[in-house]
Image (cartoon, rainbow, N blue to C red; front, top):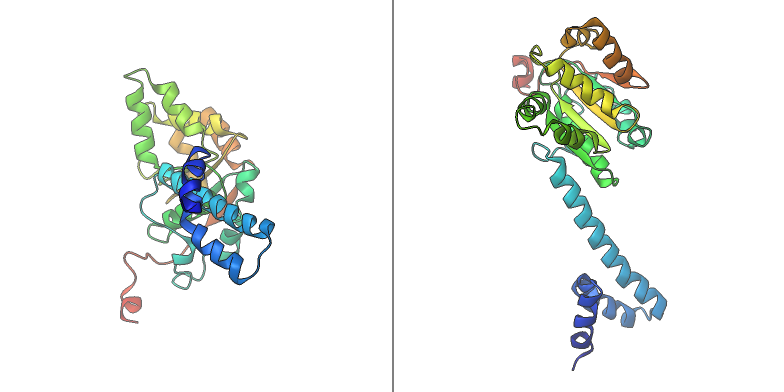
Length: 248
């Protein structure tokens, strides 16, 4: 019986069967490079750690529910040179997530707010944080529906539990019914417990009227803006660039 044949059931029992994928390569390296037993074992187990880390990252990316693959490396920084690249790169360190701070991306349609918000979420997933992305209208519709089937607390908890919550297109349309209260509850529940990234076509001062109540607006915005990173993005739309740029 070959050595690998003897190892397979043992590795499976220890839930280390992923080691088999690189064992032949590592054994060849051990012979060719005259590795010590310790170095060989370190490399072999390092492969298993990398495999497990990769699976965990993939799982976090799936749970985040991003709209496609958005990465900082794919963003066209030169299209709108006025976008504060240095501030966004700083946010990409995810230190703001560790500190339970918020980031607000505001600017006109098409300048890349959603792309950058999701790209920062992708970085956070790879850094080990749990992330959830949701368009504002879908989040509010889900909370509205949950009132009917008595699942409101469970739905709110799902929005509260991730270390980073990304809410896209806040205020794209006026809030109606209980939506101002629901948005306030999400902000209140996450205050100093988790981070948020919010994107909006509205300037920050235009967010206050969304809550329909001056007192609730003040309470929500006070929490939201406490130690927040407000990133103002200006420029042309990627989806509909000016004719002069289309021709260039």
